[in-house]
Structure formats: C-alpha cells, structure tokens
Length: 121
Image (spheres, rainbow, N blue to C red):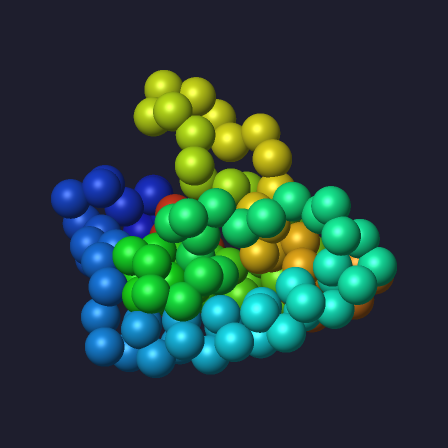
C-alpha cells in the first residue's frame, strides 16, 4: 500500500456513466425539493449554475466521482465549491445545490476517500 497520491494518469476518468446518471437523478430530485423549500424562506438564495452537479442532466450530475465527493461533502460538512470558475483560479463560492441540501451541525464520516485522495485499499 502506497502512501503517495496517485498521478492523474492513474485515476479513473471522471466521466458520466449509467450508474452516475442514476445517482445524479436522485441527488437532483432531493436538491429540487430542498431548493423549493429554501426559496420559501430565502427567495434570493443563489441559483444552481447551468452545469451544477446537483442539476439533473448535466455532465457533472452523471459523473460518479463528482457525485460521491458531493455526497461526502454533504455528510461530513465539508464545503463543496462551485466549479464554474475560470480554469486558472480557485473556486470562491459554495455550490448552490450543496447549500440547499446541507445540514449544518450534523456530520458523519463517510467510508470512502475523496477522489483526489489515495485509496485506503
């Protein structure tokens, strides 16, 4: 077992898959309901971007690795940042879908690493 981070070429491509699309459909469904409730109290809350991982049918919404990271962030109360930024800058705002679904103060540890961490196999 190596403690070094895998190189990008060792990683599984983060592309949509049938399983990712199914997971994404369900995650978007939960987010749609949470967003509707959020807007009852905060009508000017940030909207999900056009390519949000929490929006049904987007490319990120079908990518298993992205969605597993999003679920891990939600459950562990780790910020999941909006990916819609120029390629040469760091994300600076929370993902609006994540913000609609997150539950402050409740955190559990998920049994998988983030996609940019080495596997614990």
